[in-house]
Length: 417
Image 1 (cartoon, helix red, strand yellow):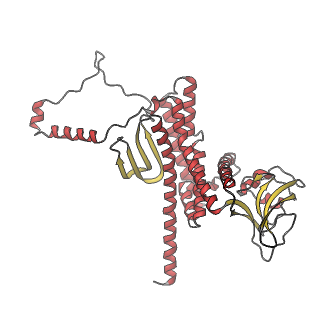
Image 2 (cartoon, helix red, strand yellow; image 1 turned 135 degrees about the vertical axis):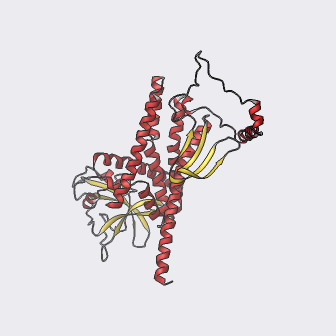
Image 3 (cartoon, helix red, strand yellow; image 1 turned 180 degrees about the vertical axis):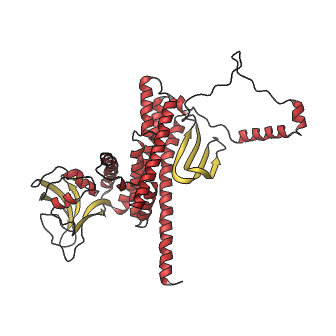
């Protein structure tokens, strides 16, 4: 095998490994979400029939001999569920009635028939009895029989667990590699001129007008609506002549109006700071901070991620950003696989993004999502009676069809455009 073929093979294996790692990341995030539902449900006395990661046929499954609950890993790694007893049922099945109103009684097999069957009937009955003894019926109350406040806690527990796990990843990332900041990267030719009063190459931007800068979209949030000639305070870190990082505050007069078309429109930022976008770009850099600052920055960064998710959805609805800028499960796996090839820092960062994204998205008031189910519980709490269960089930069914269709659409658009 030639050297070129070896490189090609290594590249293919690296790509496959990245995709597998991306799938594992998604499975972990789904498992964390459903584990939140599971822990809250168990704590509040809900009856849980199954805890499953993935959809479709089961690859691995195990029923607990202690609780009777089924745990499964299924073939399609694009979701999961914690199956609460009675969650999706909208009416109780009533036993068939006789004419006098009394329910029918089941008739036992005649002894003669059991004998003529060669004892097979009795053997099967003994086998079923052993199975029931081995796997007891899960304990707890049905989902819809629980009070609304308990159901609300269970519903939001999944998103809460996603956020807490993402926050933990951010703390680990910031603690290990340093807090993420914006960095002025020079991509032009030659040596850039460093100005004492303006942003220059290799400056680390900490804050603009007191607001922390972690992502490029933070510039859009801080500068939006500001006009040419206004002054902003920019806190930076810059290396001195001895190569030591020093913090200083620059009072920068904006060179252009800050009118943004969307959160991804950075051209006004470069113009306002007097940076040629063909020569400069905003990149990310990590720098070590103290313990408490690291923890505080982790909370702020997680909030920034959540805000960017909500803002991107809002701009998608209003048409400020194109649907092609979104991505479904396939796109998410591709982006995660690419991040995984960039090292542990990139992997932790994208995993945290996915975790916060899942937390925020699942709490949106969209049918089939936890946020919409919470709204139905609140309505029931106020009205003292539930919305027609059949209607609610139909609304959620339509919602899940819409979500799957939208996810497929955005992935297809990413592939063809």
